[in-house]
Length: 154
Picture (tube, one colour):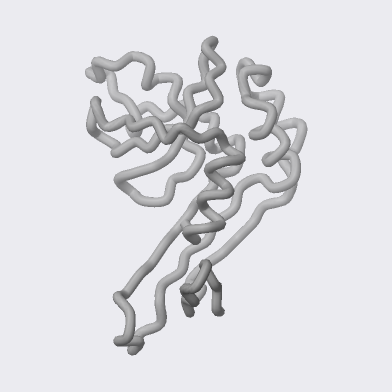
């Protein structure tokens, strides 16, 4: 597969991809405070309940450095579950992490997510799991993040 970014053309091998159907209404009803989910996120999940994509540059192309990427946009019912034991623990000092929901679980040790609490902030955060201070604001909502993903292939 070939993708062009400005003047740069990149060949890559698609390792894995997947997309789910729309979010069933029965699964939406299980989420507490559904109204706290930002509108653009509800629209995205109404069309596609998660997507995954993993790629790498072809072996043997010595003209460029090896690259790879992955995105794993979780289905809504998985994203909005309780992340105790992964995002936070009983001893975690930052109690707001109990409200952190993983949207893109692109690596075992890192993810992008959103806070699902009464503040209803639509901003996404990069989180290096296991670090209390590992939250970094991306200054993007879901629409901006999806645009960034299309430019970078995850």
